[in-house]
Amino acid sequence: AFPEWGIWQQFQTDEYQAALTSDASDKPRPMTHYVQTAAEISSLYDDVSYAKAGSVLHMWNHALTDAVFKRGLHNYLDANKFTSAVEDDLFNALQIAAKEENHPIPARIEDMLRSWTQQGGYPVLTVSRNYDDGSFTVAQQSFHNNENTKSDKLWYIPINYASQSNADFRNTAASDFLLNVSSIKVDAKLSKDDWLILNKQSTGFYRINYDDKNWKLIVEGLHDKPYKVHPLNRAQLMHDAYRFSISNRLQHSTLLEMLPYLVEEDQYAPWATAKGIFDTFHRFLIDHSNYEYFQRYLAYIVEPVYEKFGVHEDSGEQHYHKFTRNIIIHLAWMADVKTCQQEVRKKFEAELNNVVAIEPNLRSQFYCLALKDATSTEFNYVFDELMNTNDQALRNSFISSLGCAENPEQLNKFFSSSIDTGNKLRSPERLTILSAAYSRSQAGLYAAMEFLNNNWQAYGELAIGSNKPLDAAIRGMSSYVVKSDQELKLLELVDKVKESAYVNSDLETVVKSRIQDNYNWLKANRDPIMSWMLNFRNSGSASLTLSFVSLASALVIVVFRLF
Image (tube, rainbow, N blue to C red; front, side):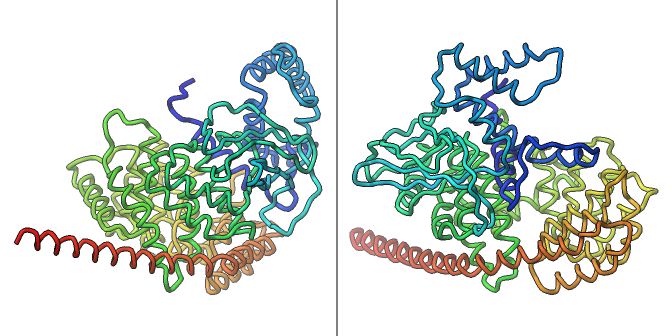
């Protein structure tokens, strides 16, 4: 209803990218999936049914054009207004709409959409350019997070593209199709020096990998004139490059050389995507002896942007600009930008002393950062705010912020509130307290494991209906284990509870599998990333020294001329 709000930026980061990540397992289930029991039905309320389904419909809306899709939905709703429907009813309605709108389609709607609804997963398109004649080849294969997983699945895939010389991302209708074939050639007559980007506005539900030269041209283009590339494509280029780099499909250097373009970025979707990447790097690299290299790299990117955004909201600014400011402040703190840390503390203390209130959109972020090293008085202030407000949005914000604390005593007080049934916490809130902390810091993870080790039975009794909060908490913590002592503590806890009724029988297997996945990430990615950042640090220092020498030389010349 309000396109100026930029809601598709949030759709991309919250739904589209989430679906691409979760639907890339070794055995993804299809969207159309027969179920019978209540438990089977309940299990379908997931990213496949919602985020992926919405993304696939979004893709075909653009591929077939808005006119065809809207008429098709009208036909579908009108024909089935007093009855139930199946997917074929929608496909038939869209087929009729295409004919009514005189819109040519290369195959039956039923065949094209069934390739997406009746098989799980999605494709990765590999683009190989011929730099002599300007053509390019697009090949498809099933994408899995595990690069060793293979499949012979094929899809009907709508594609379009933009180039550096024709950087028009507005028309998102399909210009070409892969019609259930492994590859096609597109005679595009591209200049050899132009970047090529497929999937305008990132509407197609697939990933795209390019040959090395085109990746290089894209990176150069982003650094030179990032605004020529649509912000949704800027976001997805980073998201794809990250997934490819951690699965041996792309060199880490491509992603790491791309990210500094963010110095010129001010849009929400690219920064939200970058935040996910930097948060992952932080989680896996924080114990590295040279973690400061990562912080310097991040500071190089985020500090100039932080200076532009600042810590105060401006009257009348667009609401996604406010969301972006939160991300910038979060990353600037992570990068150890001192001005950010000082200004956050100052603003938090001003609210604490009833001088100036923090703006609502910033409160959760500022509370979180300030509570990382808060005094008992500061922690108790936020804790009491949680207990005394009836505003659910504020309560959620306070729980999220309190999880950022890193003091063991404060965390224990926070965790203990989850099993204190005499306090003012609401039942569903009690199940969110542990994850608010163990997902934020290693201090939170250690404290959560210690708390459950001493209180696992009481926590298990928090179950609502058929859910098992103890089981969910331990599984969740396993995703954040990156060191052997953390593994030992968590497996000791698993051994203590695995025979109880509070957990599922496969808990130990799942926990060990997730921990091994983390170790695999570290083994494959930590050293090449840190090695690249060391070179970045050294080259950055060299550039800084050169700039200083140049400045000194210029001053000598000026002084010489004056005298």
